[in-house]
Image (cartoon, rainbow, N blue to C red):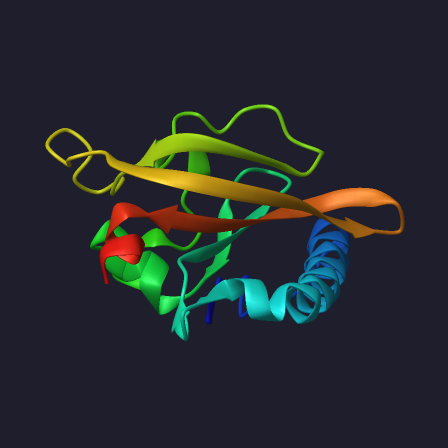
Length: 144
């Protein structure tokens, strides 16, 4: 799984320290959520496209099937605003399932939207939603 690199900028000021604490809290919460979701990520022994969207709507983690589905290298996609990938990304905070379309943000003007069933789970840390996990099911998954 690829994860956005938010470190390596040298000296830390107060805002950097706060961001580092948020990043650490996010990472711990996401790790626990991944342990809980474990088997859900696999569909017929194949990994489903999976993403972690931070509270600020940035893609902070994803697996190879997600990057392959979108036709992007992980370094091009990590840190991207998720609404550029999924326009239907809106109300957040609770678990839900819905139908949406995803597309590559790099080739947005001519990328063909890919229909997907999206399962969203909030990731909590200290009672606060710090991220959401997304599992995607596409027609490609069902045909494979």
